[in-house]
Amino acid sequence: MDIGTWHAWFDGATKDTNPGIRGIGAVLKGPAGQIVEIAQAIGEGTNNEAEYCALMAVLDAAVEAGVQNLVVYGDSQLVIKQVSGEWLINARGLVPLCKTVVELKALIPNVSLCWIPREENTEADALSKRAIGVATAAPIDRSVWMKITEIGKPFGLSGVALGKRMDAAKLREGGKPTQLALDKGCALQVENNFGHEYFWHRKLLPVALKEALLLD
Image (cartoon, rainbow, N blue to C red):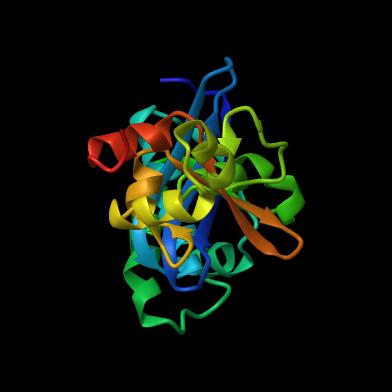
């Protein structure tokens, strides 16, 4: 066990809508340079549920690591104030999540929760979004991630023709990547000032289409 002070950051995200597909992200750092990163998709639900689940995940990791002293940072005032008992819980679905967080906290001798602005929670934010295939504002490697028109050219296919094969392979629906595409690593959803845009992996998309027998 390490009796030094550990620090943790957590964040939750939903994709496109709220409720929507949820992702959790968290980072746990120890005084001797230890680091645990968590990035996981957890199915459909609300953003507040995702925030709670992210906190649960990083507390669970801290318990497993035998942490004795922990400071946890998050940008969700709702979660932090509800867990501390300052705010009432109006959403019934959050009650069992809060109960689990309190139980996990009790397993660590010294724990404090601190609210921080979103711009100071970038690591956990990026992990939560990565879990659901949403890229942050970091530059996109355009030699790897492309539009479908660019990917289709070497195969003699227009963007429309390639798009139809992607739809048939259930990699795309309504012009957007499906969860299957995200699971296979084929798609990347990137936030911009107008909402989102989508890029596709130059190598993994053709492989997925060949597996589905929809590309020679």
